[in-house]
Amino acid sequence: NATRSKLPSAPLTPPIIQVKKESPFQIAQQYITKLESILASNDISALPSVMHADSWWRDMLTFSWDIRTIHGLDKISDYFTSNLAATGLYNLKLRETGKFAPSISSPIAGLEWLESMFDFETKVGRGSGMIRLVQGSDGAWKGYMMYTALQKLKGFEEGEGDKRPHGSKEYDVEQGNWQERRDKEKEFVDSEPDVFVVGAGQSGLNLGARLKAMGLSSLLIDKNERVGDNWRNRYRHRAHCFIKLIVSIDLGNA
Image (cartoon, rainbow, N blue to C red):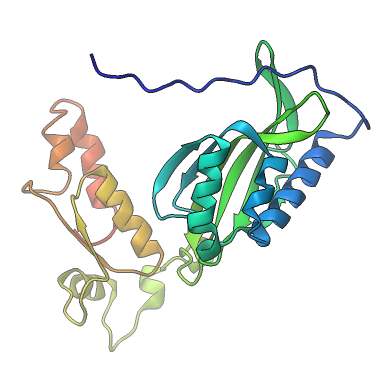
């Protein structure tokens, strides 16, 4: 008899009104510019001009270092009132090409929306998001489903491409070869770990990999005897090759 969560309802919208025959990109650009102006000035009282009354905002770490789903304009306004000043949201840029560029679609009967991905910055990092806009009878476009996800921290950018460690190419006689340096790193001979991770399963290993790519050391511990045992012991017949591959890759300290 558990109480079920209310499922999201879609606002019935009139057919798309092509008042000025603007392209989806032009409509989305005008919207994103207005939204950024409101957020940059921290003018929460102006949100009703760009957000649908029954809107949803899914946020992953951008504003509160938490994963939140907020439903309703009033609650979204409260969320920004509590968090926006500390983080900010600016440099919003639409994806101009590809399948995530602005486009109009009708996911269900009676609902038409304009959707696009965008990239953004905050005071501490960079991320990407999604907007889904619906049009009212007056022709105004407002946000109905919004998504933001913080993906990178400024000053702790991940070592990608040419920035990745190159093993033997970084050989230093005084520091030793790659294996010697790796052994010292695993034992924390000259330092303490920056981050302590409880659980060395799939999520813990992924977190260790991301931390190392950001230049942060981590120590992973697990209640099982070996790294990956929570998978190895759960899927006896099929997990061996997968786990062997995972633990053989230098993901971090475990």
